[in-house]
Structures are given as C-alpha cells and as structure tokens.
Amino acid sequence: MKKSTWRSLVPNGITCFRIPLSISLCFFPFQTTGFVIIYILCGLTDVADGYLARKWNVAGKCGAMLDSIADFIFTAVLLGICLTRLKWSSWMLWWMLIIVIIRCFAICVCKIRYGVVAFLHTYGNKITGFLLFLFPLLYGILPFTMMVVLLCTVASFASVEELLIMITSKKLDRDQTGMKQ
Image 1 (cartoon, rainbow, N blue to C red):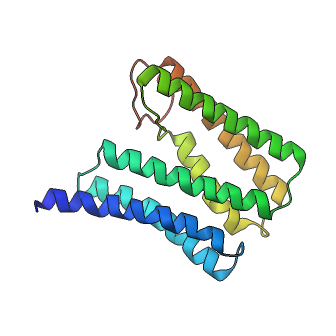
Image 2 (cartoon, rainbow, N blue to C red; image 1 turned 90 degrees about the horizontal axis):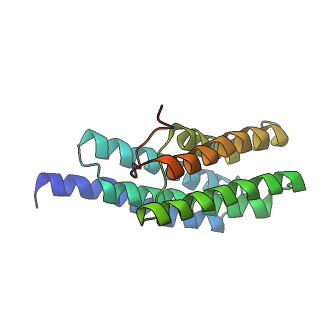
C-alpha cells in the first residue's frame, strides 16, 4: 500500500470512529465521568482528523464529506441529549427551531443548485461548533440563559451566512470561510 493511501486512511478512520463515539453518548447520564470522557474524545477526534489530513497533505472531498457527516451526527446526538435532559424556555426552543429551518433551507438550496448536500466550513460554522462543544462542559458553571443566547446568536449568523453563500455562490466550495467580498 502506498504511503499516501495509508496516510489518508488514518484521518478518515479517526473521523469514522467519531460516529459510534457520538452515538454512545446517548447511553451515559449527562455530565457523568463517562459522558465527559467520551465527549472529549469526540472533540479530540474532530480536531485530529483534520489536522492529520492537512499535515500529511491528504485532505480531500471524501474526507471533508465524511467529516461533515460525523459532525452532523455528533451535533444531532448532542442536540437530542440536551433537548431531552435540560430545562428549556419556549423562546429558546423556538429560536433553535428557526436555526434548524434556516439550515434545512440552505441544504435544499445546495442540493438544487449544486446537486449535492454539503455543509460549509465557514468561520461562523467553526465558532458555532466550538461553542456547541463547550456547552455541555460549561453547563452548571455559566448561566444557562447566557450560554443559550450566545450559542443561538452565533448559530443564527452562521446559518444565515451559509444560506446566503449557497444562494449567491457560482460554484460550491465547502472550504469557503465566509461571504466573499
């Protein structure tokens, strides 16, 4: 096996490992030691796969799509856990629903315009992902309402930005970091 082939298997394997790790979070009580360990492992694998792919110059469309799928599964699992295990005000739930609707609309626009489902690696999405990752770790330490407002504000801007990029871009660029001037 060629060195470059082997090297591309490692980051993709790490990404694939994040999927069952994410799903296993459902089987642990929120914020227990087991939950936190697996949760941190999910975060480390998310950082490690991209780092290794770039370092070894094996980053590609397949790996980017696999990473987006793993990120989506992790986010969906986390959202499910948080929605069922935490106390939410109705305005928070409505705000999150609006964000989901915008995201779904962006996915539909992408599918119609480019023929594929894609998620962009914008700075807004990266910041949203980072804040989302911190959310369970900071729950109980920082005021819940403050965390929700911060996360939803950033996620709202990132969602609208992604939708606008999908609507206005001539071609799909998953690695676009934001709106082009």
